[in-house]
Length: 346
Ligand code: HEM
Ligand SMILES: *[C@@H]1O[C@H](CO)[C@@H](O)[C@H](O)[C@H]1NC(C)=O
Ligand SMILES: *[C@@H]1O[C@H](CO)[C@@H](O)[C@H](O)[C@H]1NC(C)=O
Ligand SMILES: *[C@@H]1O[C@H](CO)[C@@H](O)[C@H](O)[C@H]1NC(C)=O
Ligand SMILES: *[C@@H]1O[C@H](CO)[C@@H](O)[C@H](O)[C@H]1NC(C)=O
Ligand SMILES: *[C@@H]1O[C@H](CO)[C@@H](O)[C@H](O)[C@H]1NC(C)=O
Ligand SMILES: *[C@@H]1O[C@H](CO)[C@@H](O)[C@H](O)[C@H]1NC(C)=O
Ligand SMILES: *[C@@H]1O[C@H](CO)[C@@H](O)[C@H](O)[C@H]1NC(C)=O
Ligand SMILES: *[C@@H]1O[C@H](CO)[C@@H](O)[C@H](O)[C@H]1NC(C)=O
Ligand SMILES: *[C@@H]1O[C@H](CO)[C@@H](O)[C@H](O)[C@H]1NC(C)=O
Ligand SMILES: *[C@@H]1O[C@H](CO)[C@@H](O)[C@H](O)[C@H]1NC(C)=O
Ligand SMILES: *[C@@H]1O[C@H](CO)[C@@H](O)[C@H](O)[C@H]1NC(C)=O
Image 1: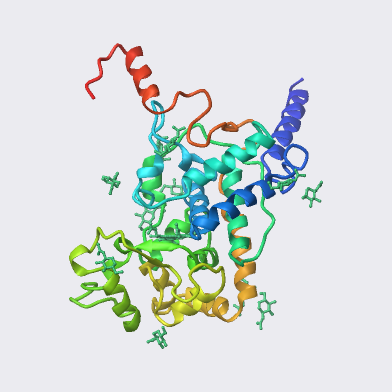
Image 2: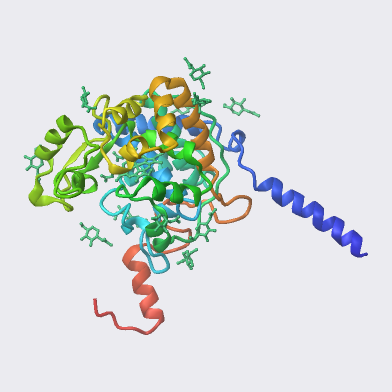
């Protein structure tokens, strides 16, 4: 008897393992046109907002680094959820959430209750890179959406632009991403924008009263105009992450680093940290766009594989900002309070 139960257990375990795989054809029968639908919404959003693709790929990154690629980032505050959206790396910084909701609505009207918000972020990342001139890759699908978010994990897992190379490596290796992944994925800073408050520490008193010695002096002068000293640390003025081809997905991010023209400290340390193993990788990608594109695609697939919920875990959310069956926003808070017999003092 024991061995029969063991055999049944082994079979069931094998089935559940096979469910735990993502697959490029996951929606072939249930939503075959999903990529076109996502692409259509992003293309139309990009006409009034050329930055949107960059903002969308960043959402996928910030989702995957916090309890896996499960759309936890998209959940708003509610009675049961403490949103990740106010974490240090997200607050007044992530954007594109409204476009994600538009994508979700378009997908729901063709294929109701089928495609997860986590998969929408993965598809949107790939579509955005292609629309900006980068290479395509085969997107793995079948992720499900979380029932939880984790603000403290968002605060400790999302890397800071002020980090050293060792600290960046540590945060990536915590997600099982290696040094090549770090350098390749940082290449996403070939498009999009950043606020002065994330790099203006480099402009005036970086060390010993001087600016960052690894910042090109011509670039320094430009950036000082944009980000005056009186505002250091709280300036929300924007500039391009890639000063040569701001909206094109290409290898210029790496050639910028070779000229000390990386915008964030976390960009420039990949090339300017003495003796680092990242220098040769930057040189490789700067010389060979095919090498960059291949490595980027491989690393995006790897990042997209971080701890997905699969099978019957989690759910397919109807609205990306809330778990199914929850009442949104103030309604949720009010009903929780009345259940507890509390009188609101807010
Ligand atoms: C290596 C560690 C990283 C750090 C410290 C970092 C930090 C930042 C910061 C500070 C900004 C500017 C945000 C703002 O001004 O509001 C930014 C923007 C951006 N990041 Fe990263 N990032 C990292 C890696 C990545 C990765 C892995 C990706 C995607 C694969 C990515 C994609 C982007 C994009 C596309 C933007 C522009 C977003 C927009 O214009 O809305 N970053 N990043
Ligand atoms: C799934 O759909 C894609 C896109 O339409 C197609 O390229 C692929 O061959 C299909 N795969 C299977 C197994 O049906
Ligand atoms: C797929 O989606 C695109 C974009 O929304 C649409 O133009 C096209 O007609 C759709 N194709 C099918 C077969 O539904
Ligand atoms: C988020 O940013 C807003 C506006 O700058 C600020 O008022 C708020 O305190 C920030 N929240 C957190 C948690 O840092
Ligand atoms: C967030 O994650 C940490 C570390 O895994 C865990 O200890 C904590 O209980 C989680 N918090 C929530 C609200 O899930
Ligand atoms: C990320 O790196 C910072 C700086 O070294 C560290 O404090 C933090 O614990 C790291 N987080 C993870 C999850 O590796
Ligand atoms: C990431 O860091 C957390 C806490 O710092 C730890 O529990 C976890 O095992 C680490 N994961 C990996 C893959 O290093
Ligand atoms: C924003 O940048 C402009 C130059 O483009 C500069 O004149 C202005 O002072 C900056 N704003 C702030 C708040 O620093
Ligand atoms: C600074 O950048 C310019 C191009 O923007 C380049 O010509 C120059 O060589 C760079 N200087 C250094 C020290 O890399
Ligand atoms: C560029 O990189 C690709 C992919 O790694 C490689 O096949 C090719 O030989 C490289 N080209 C040169 C000129 O090194
Ligand atoms: C350049 O990068 C590609 C892609 O990661 C890799 O296959 C190749 O070995 C690298 N070449 C050198 C000379 O490092
Ligand atoms: C989530 O918050 C955003 C911004 O505050 C808002 O636009 C959106 O409607 C909210 N979603 C839900 C389901 O409450």
